[in-house]
Image 1 (cartoon, rainbow, N blue to C red):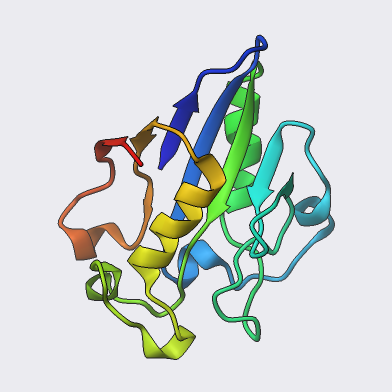
Image 2 (tube, rainbow, N blue to C red):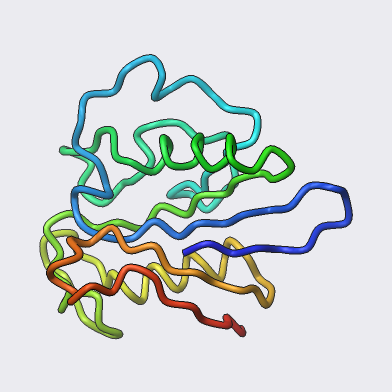
Length: 155
């Protein structure tokens, strides 16, 4: 999801909610580029703090975490938007089927409620009304071509 927030300075804030399965959460080997900070890219941590982004970003399955597409995506978006800062909210849950992303649904493997946890993290990260554009990291064929959806977020 991307959120375009108004700011008091000349920089835009683009906020992306990173959701999906292990392909979004990341299981790849961490390389130097994955830990090299970018002055425009930030992430919301497990401890709910904004910090400069680096891999691994997700924390769904600590024994399996690694590189996913989130930080590379953030760097690419920063290159396309030099007047914006990119904020990433990692919420992917490996091995979660789309049914596990329904409101109030428990996922035993990670002892979590993927949808509810993502919403709670997003509210905590933003605490304001924003415009959301959804970027799904779930295999597109599983959700019948839904790759972008727009919402107005109101707390």
